[in-house]
Image 1 (tube, one colour):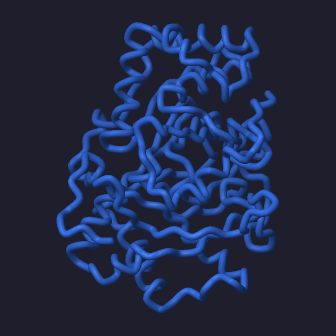
Image 2: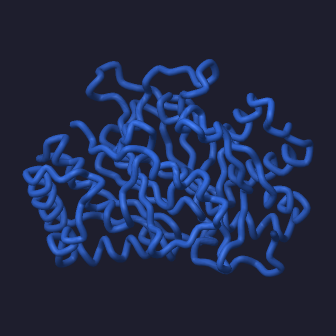
Length: 338
């Protein structure tokens, strides 16, 4: 359904109206030390990363608590994204770093599994897998270009452990701004995007669950605009004979949506550095990544750690989202094995 009025929301931003100070947050030396202390304490307690208690908020006090609370509000109620700089990877073991990262993530909601293996902290890296020949391969397991999409969670976070030798540039757009543009300039195509499309689960379904699900690109729910989009998975779902064939109108509508996503008027670029953490609200922000080249040394290859965060307390999703968003609840949760 298309609203008659322009969607008014802080996430309806245009890059030309933003300053770096609006969305970049640098951890101070004192805040870095607090994160290190909490990380070491959690590691000593051997607390599962998906079960970090609310008591963690008492450990992260002073300016760090305020910094993370403000960032959480920015992601959930404001622009829909934030980029932290200088997360203290140095001086921590891999396992301690994972705990520190998870503790920061808890300020944005509950951490959840990302796949049927139960990974709470996922590793985004090139595993030399072939997307085209293997229908279970995910884009994050390759070095290929990943077009604009949203993930199946309320918020997604990416911590840069190692940047690429070249490429791997991150970009985001406001899906709310694109909605408003299409409502004004191409309402007929927007109507198409407000109807269901079939998405491929690409092998992540459990027994008895359909290998594909349906949802529209745009939903209006509780007065808010929600977006869910991954064209590669829409096109991949066409491999199932029971999935309706994409119509000319659907393809035209997605083409226009993609064109706007790649327009300089809407796109904001980020070049990840070691220690950067990008947090995104998947309901209002789409993200992409350029292809990248790795270093030959294994320990220098591009590596991002990913978190999926659920925030049911503050976000009421459209009911139709539950077909996909409830998948993590069916997956056995497990802590990262460092």
